Image (cartoon, rainbow, N blue to C red; front, side):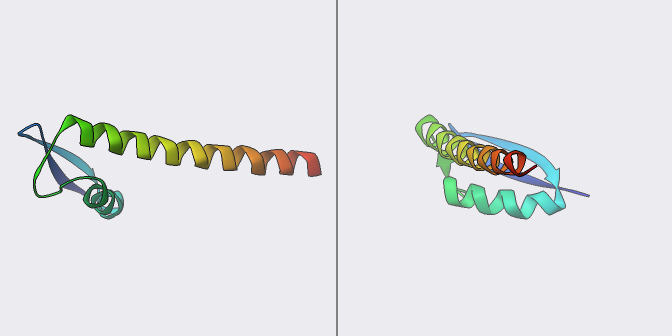
Length: 74
């Protein structure tokens, strides 16, 4: 099954269909990063993108550190 989530950006509504198990996570992230019931401007979108990219960067860095430790052990 899938669920439709929507967001207003620059006065236009954009909807995306996502799997149910991902929808709950995505919806909570969207509520944290955006005006979920209101309009969002480009600056808000860019800030959210940079925040999420930084989180991904930190996760990748942590994974690389963990893999480096594992490879040294074996």
